[in-house]
Structures are given as structure tokens and as C-alpha cells.
Image (cartoon, rainbow, N blue to C red; front, side, top):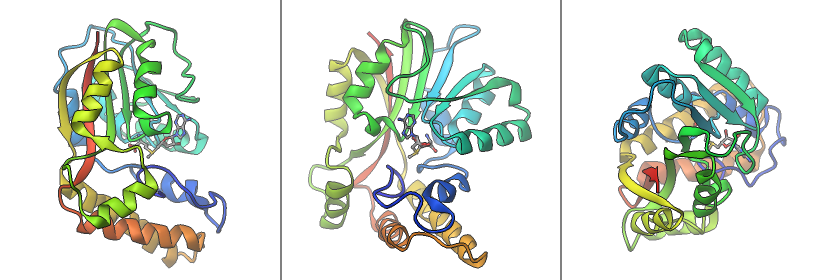
Amino acid sequence: MTGATGGKTDPEAGGIGIPGFFAGLPRQFPGSEADTLAALGQLPSLPPSACVAEFACGTGAATLALAARLEAPVLALDPSADFLARLRQRAAARGLGDRIEPVVGDLANPPVPDGFLDLLWCEGAAYILGFDAALVRWRACLRPTGFAVVSECSWLVPNPGLQARTFWYAAYPAMRTVLENIERAEGAGYELLATHILPPDRWAAWADSLEGRLDALAARGETLDPAFVRALAREIALYRNTGEEFSAVYYVLARK
Ligand SMILES: C[S@@+](CC[C@H](N)C(=O)[O-])C[C@H]1O[C@@H](n2cnc3c(N)ncnc32)[C@H](O)[C@@H]1O
């Protein structure tokens, strides 16, 4: 899948490339600051001087929300130096430059000592390791009293329609139901505190964002890999026409 969970087309084919396409968006996954804060609001208070990290932060939509609300420094990890450079600019523009620590790195091997974090945040990227594998790996990063908030595309109904199945069985065959993910999270050593389901209108807004970027690049005469553009058009149609069969779900977890 090209948009919410990665890319199967050549990342550098076409002029601007897929990373350049996404770097120009305010976020790289459906959602909103209100959703990040709604999930954050499900946590108990964090200790003063809490250690907070966001893994796979992209250009930092959630990082900025967390740093502003928690008034704490946030380590922002992503392998893309371009995304992190954009995050730095956005943090400076919001007066949050001194609260963001951008780090180029890999969520499979995060540069965080064991037992270090009070809060680990990850939106739309645990699938890179696999939801359970990510939770098991990241648990070691948490203090015994630490929390993890991880969003993951999840089925909301037992029998989704053919359009959604056709897309997701190809894009992310490992996608599971909310109950299955809760079971996996508990098996990975966490207690579930809450879930927050991204409302359907966020997917429509994400479709608008993708389409707006395509239109803006076309107006500037920028070229993109035609296979990427075709795949994106299919995604945009799905995100507009699918109701409540799937969404990104924030799993708000306490380390057990
Ligand atoms: C779907 S985007 C989500 C970005 C951001 N969390 C958001 O919600 O806007 C996936 C992100 O994972 C990052 N990523 C890909 N592989 C990674 C890895 N091995 N370690 C850390 N981040 C990775 C990408 O650079 C991208 O920023």
C-alpha cells in the first residue's frame, strides 16, 4: 500500500519520489491532533520530567501535539532525515524547537536504553515490525511503570465488504480485529487501559490530503511514478467510500 502503511512502488521512480510526496504532507498517516490528544487523555498523569519518545514520527504531527501538551521533551525517531528536517522547521514555527530531539534511527533497534521511557508513542508504523513483535520489542524500552500508545489499522467488523477486503488482504494481510489486537497486546506484557478509534471522517480528510498533494504537484509540473499515482487513486477511492469497517485504533497500554 502506498499511503497509510508504506509503499510497494519504486520509491524513487518519477521526479519527486514517494518520500518527497509524503514529506510535503502535514502527516503521513490518517489522524488529527485531536485524536492524538484523545488517546493521550486516556493515560494517567506522567511523572515530572517524563521520558517520552515517538517512534516513526514522520514529519511530526503527533510529536508536536505531545510536546505541546506534555510540556516535556520528546525524542522523535524516524529513518528519514528529510522528514526530521521538516519536523525541526515545524517545531521551530510552533516555538517547540527546544522540546524536540529528532533522531535518525530504526524502530526495530531504537537508541533507547532498557527501562528508560515513561511513554512510548507510535502512530501508524508498528506494522513495520508487526504489531505483536513491536510491542514485545518496545516493552523493554519502558520503565516498569511506563505506558505505550500504539495505533494500528484494525478491522472493526467481523465481515467487512469486498472492496475493503480486496484492498487490505493485499496491502496488509496481517491486519486483525480490535479484540484480536487487545489479546496480542495482553500477551505481549501489557494491560489495556483504553482504545481510541479514528473516526471515519479522518479517512476522508486523509484522502483529501493525498489528492490535494497530487493536484499541487501536477500544477507545478512535478512528475511522479505512474504506478504510485494509480495505486494512490485506488486508495483514495477506498478511503472515501468505506464507512466503518476498518480504522486506525490507538491501543493505550500500561506495561505489566
Ligand atoms: C505511515 S508513516 C507514519 C508517520 C507518522 N507516525 C504519522 O502518523 O504521520 C510511517 C513512518 O514510518 C517510518 N519508518 C519506516 N521504516 C521505519 C523504521 N524501520 N524505523 C522507524 N521508522 C520507520 C517512515 O519514515 C514514516 O515516517
